[in-house]
Length: 277
Image (cartoon, rainbow, N blue to C red; front, top):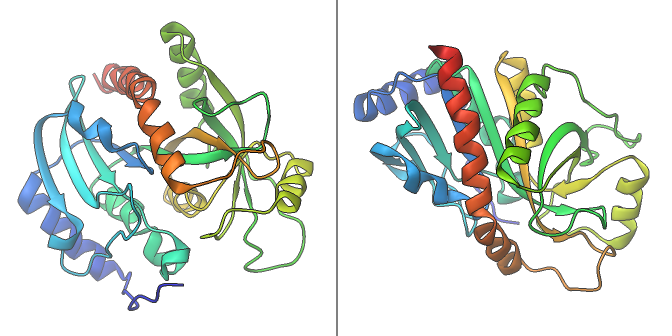
């Protein structure tokens, strides 16, 4: 596992990062989006763009995973000012929980109230083939970091906003996009899960599995942010299909599904603008 230097996540650091972002972008919007593996094409849809590389920000961690460009992009999407975090962090990169959630804390400090979290994940259900989008309605922490007890489903509105989930469903139907709803299982990675692990997650009611996102969901809920999480199911999890799993396939499927993903996000953002008006 890659080892990285500890990073302070103090209030002073977040305030300092906020000032650095504001000096460059002047951002004053209420909506933020975290982009997962292979889903960075949304940034191309913004107008009046201003981009800040993570490496430009003093005290900010660096994304090391292929498919994560590692930059903030502010601009306008369907008339709404948005801030994108194109690239996230994972515990398997050597970062701790507080570090991987810095983008969410920074979004909150910037005044962002509406958060859309996206990821690429593996489908546990045969009926949800690669390319399907899934609105996450609950999550399971399957990392066993704190206990050996079975994970407990977390599906409260503090973590998963029912109005935003309903909007995602309605707009997906309007656009003719295949979408499902379900529970996301968080694992540590970086290796893909075994067939036995997937069978266990299935028995718990899991619908998708991945190595990120839940720390962001938890932090956003604690900060009182209105949150919608969307998964692009890029592959079948181990044992669901006989096909081998590779990160390259994940990126390829995410890129193929990006048009549907972008169209859905745009409709949701348009609705948020109407709410703000």
